[in-house]
Image 1 (cartoon, one colour):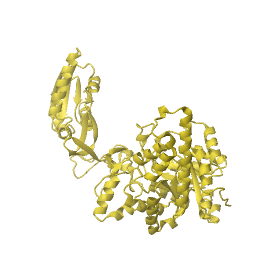
Image 2 (tube, helix red, strand yellow; image 1 turned 180 degrees about the vertical axis):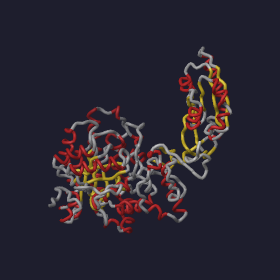
Image 3 (cartoon, rainbow over the protein chains, first blue to last red; image 1 turned 30 degrees about the vertical axis):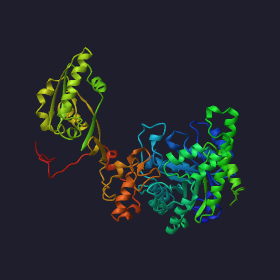
Image 4 (cartoon, helix red, strand yellow; image 1 turned 45 degrees about the vertical axis):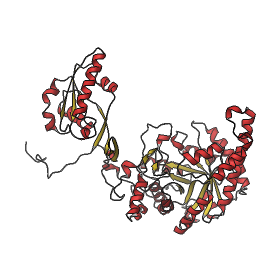
Length: 335
Length: 229
């Protein structure tokens, strides 16, 4: 395979950027709950030039959306490189492999293997779940599809193989926390080439996690991208702190968001005029973007972090000011 | 044991329809232990059905009987006469008992009075929890005696997903994270290294996914395929 001849596994822009040692920026794009390609194109236009690759979510939060492969193909047509997300929730090993053959044939080169949110959270809570395999088994399977040209059953693939740069997720702050660096190492051992973490707001805790990861030495075997995302309001910060497993939001971050809206402090939304609401929202969002920029700057200093994964779903406009503010624009070009 | 929960009176009545003679059949084994379909429950349900049907001006003749195990033919033979006289049999056994009646009495209309829920145990008086998924390829030897197939919401084999928090599963604060339990147990027993080994995709063929299952023990059979009939 030509990409192997030049030393790359797949030769995607993401792989080249990582291999070149640039501090990589990936983004996230949530496909619509419709068949409208226009939505994808609009979002892609907001991200193009500001990220090196963009994750296309796979029925995120277990809500039916345009498929990640379909949406990813549209993104690719727009000149932006997609990272296809694939969960274990909706497909068995036959469907995963078949879809990946199709994705590869369509020119998609990056894949993120996920367990997937339980379907109980989404809009089809009565659905049967699959979980034929877990994310580590998927990582191993797709690595073997690429490197050994075999299917999970062991049969040889005839003709062109499905080759992906294989990614996996990490949740540094989920429980049991002591096991998390070991689980990351296990994913890398299973074949993960890159890792994207759950949202980081607590840099101190993330630095401790990375210290353990470095002790295991696995930061040299895969590229670790830290997940970041802009906050829209103090309410969102508190919600994530209290309700989303595996996300730590330190009080300093919540305080910064509160401070940004202090002019309207103590007032309920119903007591504000539409103009005041808009102004408050704007103030919060500006601070949310600034918090994200400051997080990136701090995260960049941690040894073993190869880049950031900016999750600004349904707020793709925020990516441009974040990337610019963090001094990561323009994005380097690799051949 | 197999656990079950009684269906609502409304659903049971709709399953019985306008049958005149109803036989409620309890089971003396698992569903007795979980207070869902034993002799006591059969008596109470019969009485409720009699009262309800009377109030609705369609009085039904509802009687009850309980056998030791509905899942074995010999115990069903004991109530052959009662079953033959009924327009409808309402089985308070698990799904196995209901099917045993249907199979053993081809001319009898049988309906379930319970929803068979899971294979589990009472963790305290009045609370039962699932423990086994009967997957056909037991992994408990790898996981310290805690089943990730039955007890992890995603049946994961390689450790906890990102939804584990404070010991519980992302789906519900009342559901313990099986992998937290496994991690704690393996760690306390100095066997954490088993969690670091990559477990390959499971063989679901021996689970229900491979089709209905059957066990044949030639050493125990009285009639074999070679026996001349």
